[in-house]
Length: 115
Image (cartoon, rainbow, N blue to C red; front, side):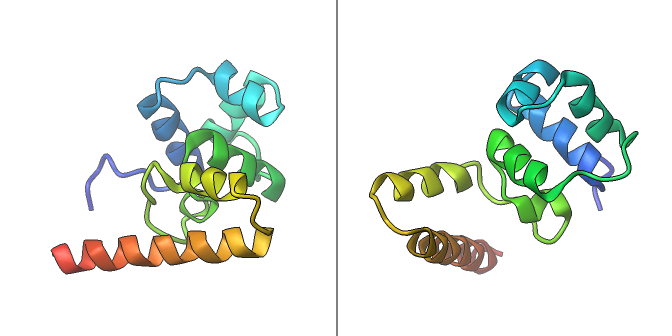
């Protein structure tokens, strides 16, 4: 495994924040916490990140919550762009979740086919 691959939620938050050229303040403002809280998330000085904050962090960092939690590989940067677009179509939350899930499956299948 690449030594630059983030292993835990704190590393993933920091790496993605830097990829997006965001400051601690930028992320903190988007998720409604102090910048010191984001810093504690990144350094894992806090024991855990609440599930509501995982979702908010994922949205701010344009990744899936599952990626941050280590349940799946990093999704494309368009994960939340797609979800936002689907919500703008005035679809139900269930429809948005279904279509987002299908798009993720198609993307995974495409990556597997390219290997």
